[in-house]
Image (cartoon, rainbow, N blue to C red; front, side):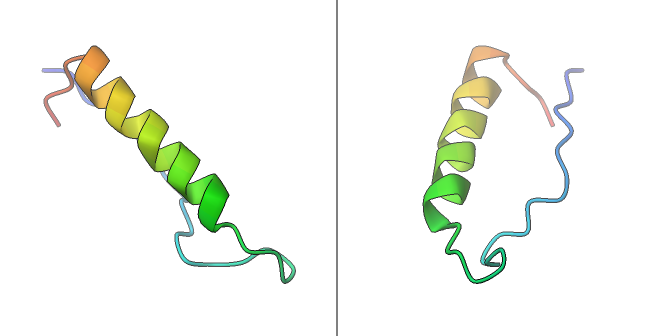
Length: 42
């Protein structure tokens, strides 16, 4: 079984007043690619 562990996403939070929506979207896009390419089960 392949497991991909991630943590500390802090989705929806800003950093010292800076919007992080673009950064979060890029990470989630990357994560979806990894899940598919690596054939992750959980």
